[in-house]
Amino acid sequence: MLSTVSLLCLVAPNNQLANMIGDGKQGLGVLAFSLDWSVFSNAFLQSPIATPFWAACNLFVGFVLVFWVALPVAYFKNLWGSATLPLYSMDVFTTNGTRYDISKVMRDGVFDSQAYDNYSPLRMSLEFSWVYGIGFAALMSILVHIGIYNGKEIITRLRETKAKHDDIHGKLITSYPSVKAWWYMVLLIASCATGIGVGIGAGIGVPWWGYMLSFAIAIVLVIPVGIIQAISNRQPGLSLVAELLSGVVLQGIPTGYSILKLYGHGSLAQALSYAQDMKLAHYMKIPPRHVMIYQLVGIVVSVIIQTCLFFWLIDRIPDMCRPEGYPWVCRSTNLVYSASIIWNLIGPMKVFGEGSPYSPLLWGFLFGLVLPIPVYYLQRRFPNQTWLQHVYVPVILSGIVGLPPMPSVDFPMWFLFGFVFNFIIHRYWHAWWQKYNFTLSAGLDSGLALSGILQFLALAQNGLKLDWWGNQVDRQCTLSKKPWISP
Figure 1: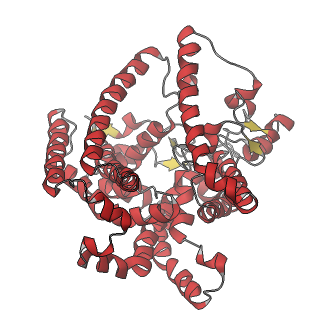
Figure 2 (figure 1 turned 60 degrees about the horizontal axis):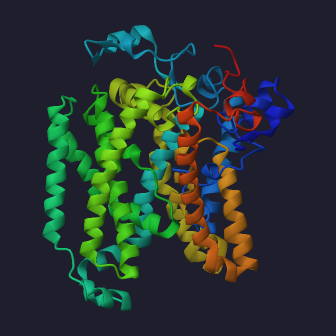
Figure 3 (figure 1 turned 60 degrees about the vertical axis):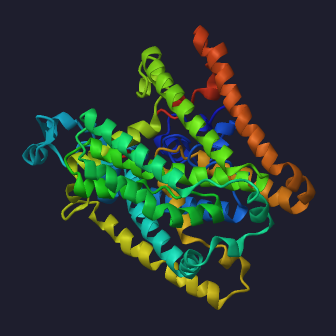
C-alpha cells in the first residue's frame, strides 16, 4: 500500500525547513501526494467525485490562501510566539513549549484559577488557533448568507402548504402512507429523555439544561446548514457552536464540551444524514414508513456494534490513541481532548480574552458578518460573470476548519481528483461522466471499507504488518514536528 509520500522530505531529510513545508501529515504538505483512496475521500471532505467542481474550487481557494500563503508567513515571522511551537499540531502547550499538564491547574477535579496563573497560560499552534478565528467567521457568514440569499424563500416555504410544490415524485409517493408527525415527536422525546437520563445517571456532571441546550443547537441550525450542504455537498463543521456555548455556560466542567458536541453537533449531523436518506428514498419510491424503520434498526445495530468494537479495540491494540500506536492515533479524539481543555476547563475568557495573544481572533465574528454582503452586491451587480456567481463565502471559510485534525496532504489530493473527474472528464467525456461518475465514487468508498476489513482480518489479527518506505508516513519528515525556534 502506498500511503502519503512527501517529496521534499525524501530529497532533503535533514533540512528542517523542507520537512516543515513538505510534510503531508504535520506540515504544509507542499509536493506531498498519495495513492490511497482514504486520502482522496475522507471523513472531513467526503468524496471528491460527489462534490461539485465549483464547491471544490471554493474550498481549495480557502485552503491555499490560509494554509499555503498566510500561515507560513505568520509562523516564520513568529506571530504570537508561534514559532516556538510546532507548525501543525492539535495539542495544547505551555509557554515553554511543553505539553500542557491539566493536573497542574486543577484542585479536586475543578479548575483552579490561581494554580493556572502560577503554572502557565495555555498556548496552541498557530494553525490550531487560526481554525477558531476562521470558525468564528464561518459561523456568522452562514447566518448572514442564508439570510440575504435564502431568507425570503424560507419564510415563503414555511407559510405555504406542502402540496403546492409537489412534483411528479411527490405525487407518486402519496400512494404510500406517510410517517405521522407524532411518531417523530415520540422518538424525539424518548431519545432526549434517554440521553439525559444516561448522562445524569453516569454522573458526567452536566446539568439537565445543558442537554436541552445541545438539542436546541441542532434544531436552530438544521435549516441553514442543510441549505449549504444541499448546494455544495459540504456540511460546515459547526462544532464551534457547541464549544462556544459550553465554554460560556459550562465553564469548569471538562465533560461539558463533549456533551454539547455529541448531542448538539452530532444530532445536527444525524438529522441531515437522515434527511439525505429520505430524499434518496423519495426519488426511489421507497415507502416512507419502511425507510424510517430501516433507519431505526440500522441505528440500533450500529450503536451496539460500534460500542462493542470500541472496547474490543481498546483492549487489543497497545498505545491506542497515542503517537506510539500509529496508525491508531485517534486524531479526532485527541482534538476533542484539547478542545475540552480550551473551552471548558480553562474557558474562553482566559484563552481568548483581554491580554491573551489570541484575542484578535474574536474579530472573526465581525469579518464573517460583513464579508458575504459585498459578495452578494457584486453578484447582483455583475450577473453575467459566471465564476462570481459561484463564490460562496461560507464554503470558502468552512474548508479550513477541518485542519487539524485532517492531514494537510488530503486537501490538494482531494481537489486534484475532483478536478480530473468533475472538470476534465465532465467537460470532454460527459456521457461517461453521467453514466459512471457517482457509481465509481460509491464503488471506491465500498472497496476502501472492504479493503480495511480484509487487511485487519488477514494481517493485523495475525500479527503481520506491511512496513516499507511507502507507508512509513511518520518516519519521512522527522524534523517537521520540531519548533522553528527553540523556546
